[in-house]
Image (cartoon, rainbow, N blue to C red):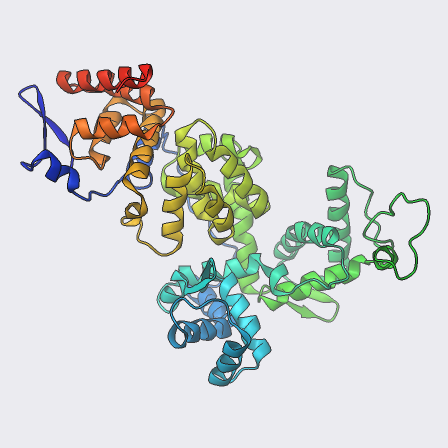
Length: 489
């Protein structure tokens, strides 16, 4: 569907009457497959990088996937039981459902609970509000090794949720150790063999101390409480709520033991007598994450050190594949929560291209971004992007995802993408952008563009009028821009 000039006049592509043409349910094909790509293409410089090779001795992907399937075998069984034997749209496993699953699968209720949690963390089961649905990875589990490995990496990233920290540990201390664990894993990976626990303990203590120095906090002392004493005039009364926290000490060896046990629980390492060794899966996963960081560190923009906005600007010059690699590297160097918050903040800005790229990066984040994306869907400027993201996250084909948008939301997104193309693309791209509109005629498009209230409407229409070769169409677009500017009908 589009527009073409005939003898200096504008006419619909088909011979339908205007009202019939307007009634057509044309899909909006812009942000992901078309306009965002064309806007990025205008500034692409075509950088490429040879595919890195994993360390010597790393099993082939098929063998790694076999090992990942073994780690997640119970989770897959439970997810398939839930998909086949439960009511469609049922929520999380209730106690009765847990007992039924245990009987059907010959597992204990605790094993069912643990497997259900792993299935969720690996993307085998997805929760949408209060509804549990089979994830796309479950459907691809037997045939797609890459889906299996991504599912296992998602579980690996969530090791601290799989093996919860003891209740008496301060949350801030637990968070510090979780943040320091990547350095421990790096040492294990570089050692290419068993590493003694005392060496890991020394590295962990150094890293936690560095984190506290960066935050200008009290240096970490493993022999003292994890919380600095409160500046109170007197000690807490025995039996008071503050007394247990003040009296509790958190030795760093205990925290290291917890972390190593959690990593072993997801199949990333094995524990021996006073030592730890990465499994082939764990070795491969750590190498992948280090490689992602190296990709960004070697980029001209140094994206890994950049803010989300500057990182996205650098990625605008890349084709989609390399851009996704940059997103993964940037994300690997940050906590998921802070990265998602920063990307959403960029999406709220004035640059429409960065808005679209921010949601592309959020697609790489996946499930952890869902709550904030769902919240963002209440904001008019982010709603179309958020709804498309959520539709794809819930399993809708990207080609069909635009169907979730109302006509008004589609028109708003058309204007927003046109603004991205006008700011960063070429005039020919802006002219071709007309083909992605849902309206059947230029007058209908202009009417709805004027009504949608996008803040960049005037600039987009002026740029389109200047770029279009059809004088009659350009005149109509300029008139619409003037009407919007002056507030006329």
